[in-house]
Image (cartoon, rainbow, N blue to C red; front, side):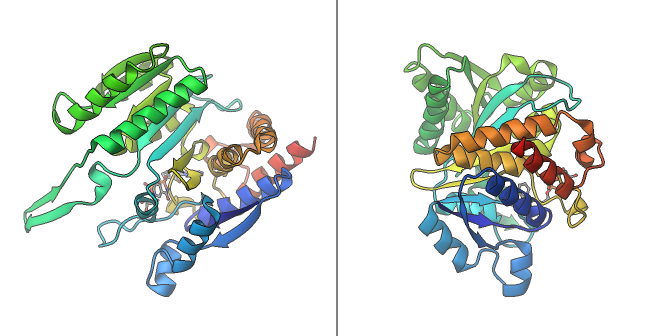
Length: 332
Ligand code: NAD
């Protein structure tokens, strides 16, 4: 089965190789259509996403994508945001699950965040009113809100989860967040077996660090989802551990939640777990659950031994040592 691999920049190159090596060793029989995008490509060609990337995505419809740098303050959009918008990959699904024996604030956490992926302040509707006044417009539509909220409830039902929590700031943004919340209340009525909770985003940020066990499936808008999923990652040991899926009606791009980590790029220090777990979500999507379960099991075993911990987990293992440990574990 052929899938697109977008290699990215920063730590993207190191961890994408690691993910391909582990997935190949699982016997999943994936043929990688490797394409490049991001800052390095921009410096060489003047474009962040060359045509070959779009062609490959449109042919294969499924991709694993490494992180990419988005230069701050320059006049172009993030590659990630561009791909999500162009292919209407409206559901960003981020499972945050404790793994191994990493020392963290909380154990046995199992949260799934559904983040709306196409609008909100990320729609890029910005205007310079004067040198001293800039506007960024928050766009929320019924269509986009309905489909992400419905997807979260359907996921909860299919996976026998207990509750869905909707996160907004509807007390202040009465029209945009108010509508998102109203739609959630309407859809919740169609799923009477699932407990429905609503919470304001500032309180959510605090409750997560006090008692995250009160949450299960969480659904929210684009910006809140971006921030809260990094916070959730912190609860289980950091950004190196959380994968994400960007899913539309006929295309899906899987990734790590984290960025290109320029501070550790090129040093063989990055933790590849998040992108490998992104690969597992991709294998599940392709129906290859035996292989994805084998990889998850191996990751759990490897992350139960501190000698395999990478720099972010206060260990000394390199990216390549970690990758080899996972591959060896799968052979046992
Ligand atoms: P980041 O996620 O790249 O890094 C934040 C911190 O976490 C850094 O200290 C980094 O070293 C650490 N970290 C992240 N992933 C790690 C891993 N796998 N192993 C070990 N440590 C890891 O966030 P940032 O520094 O704010 O952003 C850097 C660049 O990445 C920016 O240009 C941003 O726009 C971009 N970004 C891209 C994506 C994506 O491609 N999906 C997502 C977020 C940010």
